[in-house]
Length: 40
Image 1 (cartoon, one colour):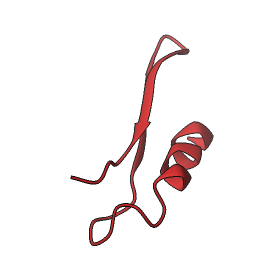
Image 2 (image 1 turned 90 degrees about the vertical axis):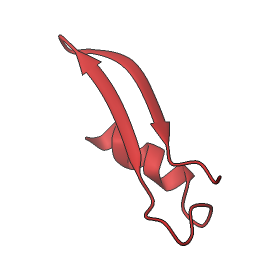
Image 3 (image 1 turned 90 degrees about the horizontal axis):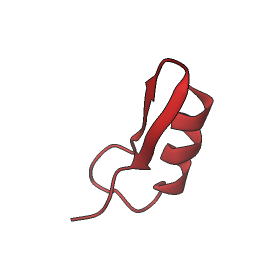
């Protein structure tokens, strides 16, 4: 959860008018991927 919050903080101010979102993909305790909402 902390890693997802850290990823979301990277997008603060860049995702308006959408929500700021961070995500992580974990399998069997291993981090597979992480990212944040991008501006399109």
